[in-house]
Image (cartoon, rainbow, N blue to C red; front, top):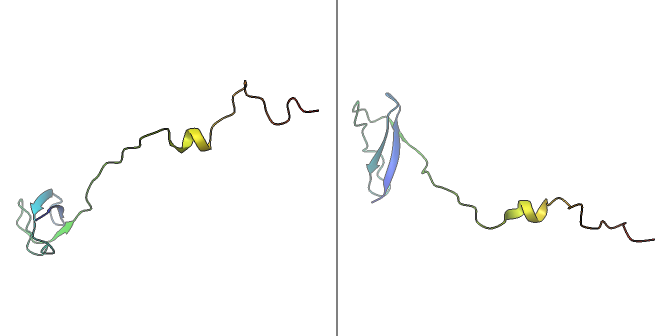
Length: 73
């Protein structure tokens, strides 16, 4: 049974509830007792690892690197 996050429509309190699969209808707000609650999207973190595309795709040319037209002609 997963734990879902809910927000009460009436009082605005956010809470978590252990709910059976697909049985989100029987959830009541613990603060005011109403059944007018909406399920919130889960929170998750994103971790970027590695050098990323900024250094590979949008890398600035260093002054020490010769450009294409230097040394030709």
